Length: 379
View (cartoon, rainbow, N blue to C red):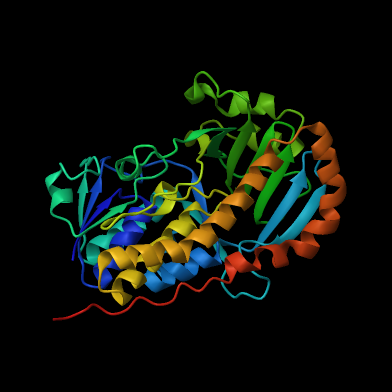
């Protein structure tokens, strides 16, 4: 099977690994010279994503590239603890969520894709249409080209376009160790601040990794000009975010956050969308769901002889799960952009409900078993 994967990020690299493992001849086309980049924000992989990595044979390498995160704590802007639960897992799961820089995740997956036999072409942009000779000669085209997917537009010229979600994100790390108010323990921390949400994680070595998700009806005119000093002014009434920002001097990543209406045409007889091209779910699950997609797609292709039937089976298998997660992500965004009255109500009720019902509400997500990849077919 001749496969062209459009996009060499998390979804594309994971798909290349999986497809090469079943004997496909895979070419990955990445428009940028380095899709990981030398800088960027961090990503967290919950246990469902880690199990999919295990199926790809990449779990240990990714674990080495990051660090485990045991707990997730939610705080009000006034430093009141609203919830304390296991991070990205059920309480009894021996796996621990892993946080690492996105560039390190992409780099690890790309290296494994190359070792698996995939050919990776960087600086090679394709339109997704059959006018490209690579696409024309492929038995299967995997659109892994993100939320602004060109492959999606080829599949359906009337497909929905991303729109600004009312949030923009700025990420960075502190210049060194920082004293956090109250000597807070290690873990993933989210502060529901007045101007949005502020995430921070003490990392090995003492520095703090952070991401400010700022609620704004209109995006800033120059996002690149928003640095720690500007953010410190926005979060001046929030003690812990202010302490972290004052210990930082530069930004590693900035982006406008977008949402996408459900994509109704996700495949045809030889082209299929995966990852954010098909379902930009958010909720910290983008990378994990993209890796799940890679395993699920490859299993269907190994089980079903005809490519069109395999793609339809893959779409049916993923539709309900990704749709449910997208609805959860929408609720999370609403919480980050809540007004002062809703914020006070959340502060009053969340300490009672969150710890009691979190595991029941998220168990369906973390219990997912992607299964194992079959061995390569031989003639």
